[in-house]
Length: 500
Image (cartoon, rainbow, N blue to C red; front, side):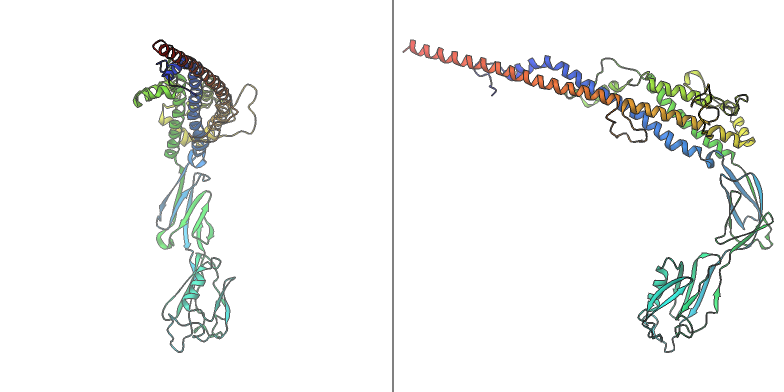
């Protein structure tokens, strides 16, 4: 049991705390080492999440044929008859279109038998003369069950709720019912079973029936039909809007959408430069000596602002000259400037007006000649697309690697390089190779996680020794207090005897 020091007059707790401070210095160093490793892992994670986003999200979108080889379709002549949109499969061409028919939906109208003028809002089929307890209404190949207790309203609801029937039914107070197919084109609507004149439900024969028609158009002399007024011809999506009649044909001109391709290349350059700028910034970031991570005790002695400024310096420069980032940046710069295709026919980004900028810009891409880039896109959009997106199933030939493989486009090279970088970061710092989350936990078998565990084990061991030492100090002071108490007691007794 600890004592207060009343006999000696000493502040025992304060004395033990002061003695322990000198022994606790190594413990604080270990705690700071743990925090420093954690800060380094977080620094790697901030880079890895950016690379994952660039590799798995931005690059695939930029590599879409619709982005890097965009086409546009323009309608001239009879612009009211059709609309057109070119997809990535379209080739530069001219299509002449004459719309002969628009697709329409099949519609059937009939009237129910009501000789006694029943109120059709409440009258059941039995009230209208149908005597069977149950029956089936057949629409096309779909059976719809109904009963003599059904009203026109409940019958119409059953028809509309049947997804397989794929029709829309309506009725009015005069007993007129219409059934219209939800799809255009040649779709038969047929009522069988008791829904006949002889079945006593229908008053008149089914003469008011309009069968749906397929849309029909002549495209460059070839007749084509469609059930939904939409055609796709050589990668051009055509929507039939009205018959051409005497208004002439519609002409679709398909051309390369140079502006869209240029915008997508600019978007890639902006995203790539941001990645490169971030990594170059980490590689050159200042390292502040003497700014070790704050322990809890040290943080309590500072204001929030002071602690924030200290943390900023403690986290700075943790990836300075890091070998993984250095190799990644070097490989990226090689991937960007290396030739594509025939090694004897130099074709690279400089061939289309893009350079790596000035030396101090760290390899950032710059469109030096936008007109040259536009000319290259318009002259051979496929070649420009291959420069960026080409894939190769073959390993690089002798003398080449994933960064300068002439059979792979720039996006493919970058993707391979970043995957290797993410693997290296994962092995070293325990970061994820697929996640963009800044809160993911670190893998326990990574190099830094292992180092952190080893330091934490040392902290646990040292804490045990310090606890034992603190207990020993208190035992020593307790013994001293007991001795002083005995001395004081004896002295008091002698004094009493002498004055007795």
